Length: 287
Figure 1 (tube, helix red, strand yellow):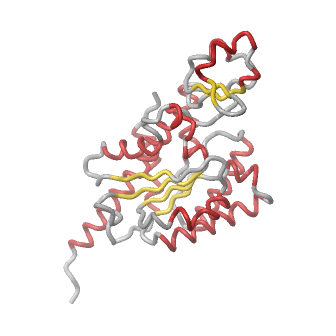
Figure 2 (figure 1 turned 30 degrees about the vertical axis):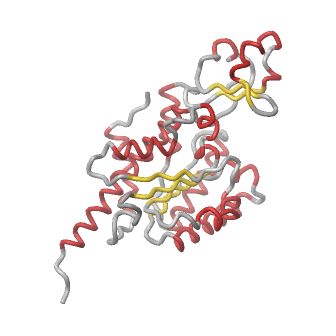
Figure 3 (figure 1 turned 90 degrees about the horizontal axis):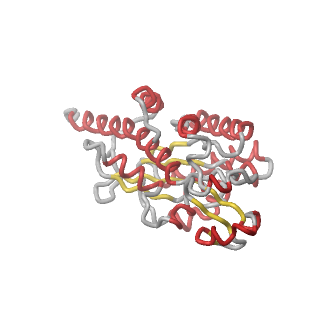
């Protein structure tokens, strides 16, 4: 299990210093709960782990439960609006339909870039533009929310990841927003737990030796049929087949790392906003 040291938690809290503190309520007006939105692609949504283990806990559940351990914080609702295969441009196309029903938010975390890099034409120019457009929409609809761009997790290879994350960091800097740099946290967990410990295996059945296909029938789903395994149980038998570890999407352990790191990042930020609110309320009213 990957745990956060005192030093790593301190590093997570540093971006809080550049957040402009709101003197309004520290939570959205939604049954007294904090409202946290997670926006992103398949690495945010987690559709395959949800299919195989509907009861979870899933990405959004891990964030909520980790925050709940901090007894001085208000309860939180965490809404996962991640979509598999999505780019920021795709989110903007569904924005009016899907976000009209979400009337308030306190914290909005944005993690895109993997699909944008492969799908968006003129990526270097258009991806930051799309990101700025999304931030403008979110600011208009959720003026009290803290908007937090996130870097991507290790997924696309070092060179592509560096390019994507460099553009995300520049957007956060230009918009004067806090940045949650999840990449080095996830990378450190991979180094500690093993290079394939945080991803599931999703492999074409057609590439499994024919003599072994009967033995994996309980793990096959989809069209075309894919062998889907959420852990290491088939690694000893098939781990030497080229591409067996090719799918880098997080498994439950991967989402545990992401979710707990997200809660650790948000915790000091929430406390700081609550403290600012309390100080504002304690000041005598001006005559």
